[in-house]
Image 1 (cartoon, rainbow, N blue to C red):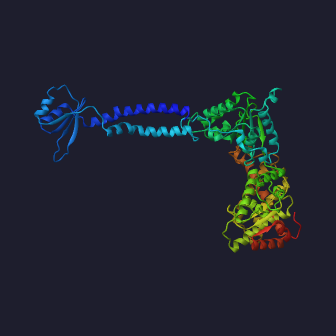
Image 2: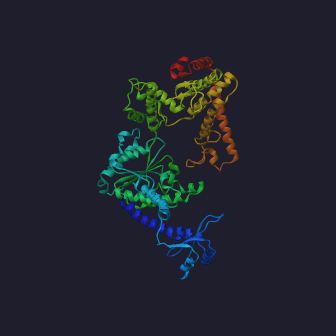
Image 3: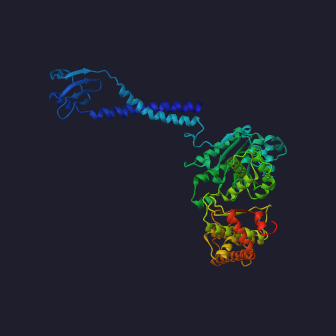
Length: 604
């Protein structure tokens, strides 16, 4: 038991005994006695009428028992004694048995009067003391920081365990060097930034990077999330911020890492617009004050991560606070290869597995998704009772991540045929139009995500810029399924609902964000980039009804043009459409190479 628990237990015991005494003397005894207390006149009247059976004389009470009758059993009563020297003679004359009793307390009375009030107090002490000494939430110290401290040698993560981070690692190496050799910086008057903000999409390894920085530097690592600061009690968040910085300064050099800092660092104008949260605002103000309060080069480095940097308060990201922002982007092809090697280094891979090919076809995947692909592939190998993981396992794992788990329920023949033409319409439009990603696989096996089929396209190179013609080709590919249904069945179906949704959103972005409408010109009509509560033109209140109507009309024209393009491509190759759809209906799956063979042209 530590000193804090010992002091608390001693104080609690004193209070508990005091409460038990008060309960026994001021509540329990008076309640029991007053229930049977009568006046002295009533006592004398009962004595004269011969109703009293026997009497017990104590120092502060006269206890007497009334004789039982046909309608009432023997009852007990008490009376406060008065100065009556003739009381003994009265009792003898009435023939009543009487005796004297010393002031003692029965065992039952002691248990009921003392142990009963102490029992709940003891239970309260037990739970509070246990929480004070354990790792759970501290009931007596809401204002204490919930940060998990990890010693440098126990982190177990180095930059060798993190791949695909590129320039972010280079910038963090400077932090490591400072934590190891601070004199090198202070000698020439250099000041390391107080706060380092890691910003990037989900799954890109921001938390892993922070741990790797502490692991490489070998310093203590305080880890907590932004939401752990705020409780329902006012002032708790600010108190936890103060306690966190006090702990960190005692452990310097060290790293404080706040994950999802947007939970408390959201711009105060946004907080007010959502409905107001004074506790969150107080916590943010305290964080700003603490970051100003400690000196640069004090050995404490604050790191934070968010995937929504645009909503952070400007005071939080100004120079002197989180003044260095490191963008953690999606990995490039060499980065994806590095990540795949890290996550498969302990896996038995077959000789056919090409991690280079996997890195090429997974453009746009985050590090977390690549790790999930490697894990899914290993699980598929276990299901096959195989000792090695094959390339087929990786391909199926990618499909599971992209399209979802395959369902076992088969489709009827009529629906299979419609779905086959729909998916082949997508695939052939993508095959014949320039600027589209190659078709990797087409399937009409239903998935758990609700799709009756899917066309999987895999880019073979990084795409940093996309031209207008390529975007229009993608629109045509999205509407290729609906075009095929209209050509073959002369009517559309509900299967194109998701295609229409995605195509409409892309056309809207082309017009309102990318300025690709000749009629509307190079003007941005979409909501501001930081307005995360609104999307498209719905977040704008400065657009006229005529402009909104014009945008809607341009979207319709873009989609009509894309639909006509897809229809023209499919009608120019009717035999290929029929053969590919028949093959897909029979086999349920068609690969990109098989589609190219049916089209009788070399694969793209």
